[in-house]
Structure formats: C-alpha cells, structure tokens
Length: 315
Image 1 (cartoon, rainbow, N blue to C red):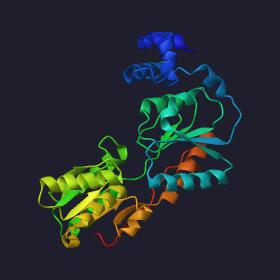
Image 2 (cartoon, rainbow, N blue to C red; image 1 turned 135 degrees about the horizontal axis):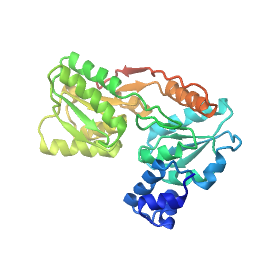
Image 3 (cartoon, rainbow, N blue to C red; image 1 turned 90 degrees about the vertical axis):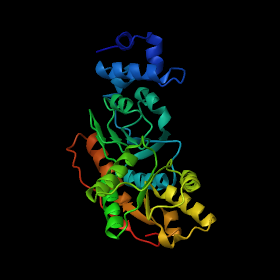
Image 4 (cartoon, rainbow, N blue to C red; image 1 turned 90 degrees about the horizontal axis):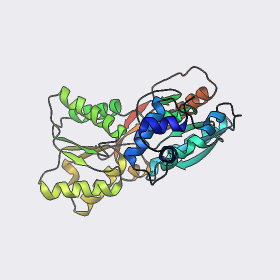
C-alpha cells in the first residue's frame, strides 16, 4: 500500500507538504494541493486513519457538504434530505465544503452528500475511495461516487421552446456562473432550442446566482442598451427577482417584457414569476435512496426527476 512518502515523491514535494495538502492546510498553494491530490489518486493512496475506517462500524451519520453561499433553495433541499434520511435511521451533519479535505481522516461517517460546487472533483474522487459519495454538482462517476445533479438542460430547453412558440424571437439569457455545472446545463438547453429555430441570443447577461447580481446585471445592461429582449430567461429565480426589483424601481413598462426563472422558490410566487420547477421532493428521495444503496452495496437504480413550467404573470 502506498504511503504519504510515495505521494510526496510523485508530487515533487516534501512529506510535510504532502500531508498538509491532503488535510486541507490553507498555507498550501492551490496548485501544490492539486499536484498532491492528483498523485494520491494515481497511486490509490489511502490515509492511515481512513484505511482503518474501511472496516469501521456503521455510524448512521451522513455528512452533507454545503457552500458558504447557499440561498433559499438550500434550506428546502436540506429539509427534504433531513426528513428522508431520518426515515432510514440516518442522521445528517452539515459541513462547509471548504473542510472537505479534512474528512478523509475522520471515522464517524457512513457517507457524503455534496451540494457544494466549489469542491474540486479530484478531491471528491479521492474521498470516494473510502466513503460512498453522492455529488449533486456535476455529472461523472468513479469508485463509490454517483452523480445526481438536478436536471437542467431538458427543462430549460422546454422553457425556451415555450418562449419561441409564443412568437418571441428576441430572447436573452442571464447566467448564474459560467463555471457552474448547473448553469452550463441550463444554458445548453437554451442554446439547443434557439439553434433549432435559427435564432441567436438577443443578449447574454452575467449574474452570480444572487438577487443582487440579477439587479446589477440588468441595471448595467440598460445603461448600455436602450432595448430589453422580449423574453429574458434566467438561470435561477433569485437573479430574476433581482432584475424585477430594478425594473420596478425605474418604472419600466412590463407589458412588452417577459421573464422566466428556474427553481420555483417561494419568493418567486410573490413576484408572480414564471419558473421551471424540478420536483425537489422526488430528487432528494432519489439522492437518499441511492446513498442507502451505496452504503449497503446494492444495485444503483437511476431514474429521471419530473419537472414542470409554472406559468405566472411574467410570462
């Protein structure tokens, strides 16, 4: 079995640096940490504490990684997960994803659910060598890791088709984060629908999945342009709400403007926002069922989650 010395040698660093990198010490530069993680994965390295964990007793504790920025949808997802895990006698512990690297030396968890898109996929790959992992933030599989991202491309494709079939040709898109898997999938669905009808995006706005970024994005756009698209499709509801706040502030004539969001969060209903609603109850049930099967070495059964477009005043 490879040792930390082998990892250090392959990564070209000292043993101390390799150990610090594996355990998430903030003094280690990101590029150095990545070299060490890559070396550990390539060598199939398992830390001493984790090697013992492979034969540990079940704790019935599931660790859930979340990001420092969660947003209102996080609370609903965590509530669903907690409820469904309890039904199977699991307890949920929430942890900031920035601490992911420390988990490989712990002994008290049965599995991991990752909701934090900022965690490096290679780190999750390393963790999955000795813990079952459900990653909801991207689409790939390795070791004991199963990806279950929330559906994005197909629902957004359907929403964009709805906008086109309603007679609109000037259709824009607001990104949440171009580095986010969720955002990439939603934009992919948007682009496919537009291309099928020979349409180019009327405009592309850049947000950050937050209400304030939606407010700022449409404010900046209107400073530079005189005309909004006929329809603006946003990668999530929070940005759409922020954009609506700004348009209301400037008394913009909404009679010729339509908007579609994604997530169907509660505040969107207050704004009468048309939104794409993926069944989060069903999705979290799938996550917990898959996790339980991973823990108990049972066959994984994948299935699609339902979604619908909730039409309100903004479309």
